[in-house]
Length: 190
Image 1 (cartoon, rainbow, N blue to C red):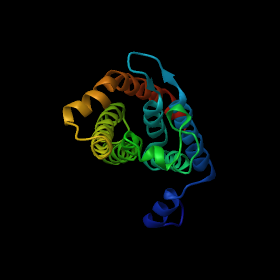
Image 2 (image 1 turned 135 degrees about the vertical axis):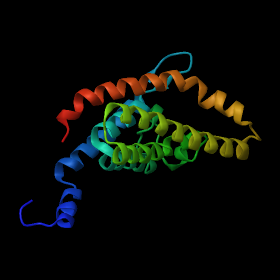
Image 3 (image 1 turned 30 degrees about the vertical axis):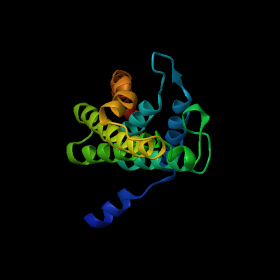
């Protein structure tokens, strides 16, 4: 920008504009809609994680993270944005709530990768994989704590076999699909 020094240009470029807020809101809605889509299989799963990956891949770290936070806040105040049309802070504090809250960890990992390594296809896929692992770790620790408090002690292997292992293949497919769509749609999102 003419007549501005580098720090002034940086402040201007960091501001969010109306279209940014529109993208953030649309992607928060996309995550909610995808959380309602259940794919029947031996262990039914939703498309929620796919939408988180797609949102972060398309909007980038800052706007994508804001979109995930908006989604979580909508659910926390009771709107039925979680799987099974559930909502409320009670749902988030339940045994599987850590996986929902873990989306913030996924977002932060993907934001870090974007800033450190750029937004190329390899970096995007790596950030999705590591972001998912962070979400799994946080969610499993949360599950074990809540389960132990409410039911009794549970081992890590049992918790992983209940909460992670059945979702490895579906989540890998979601990463592939999200990265392919990001590659094609990114040029349409400013």
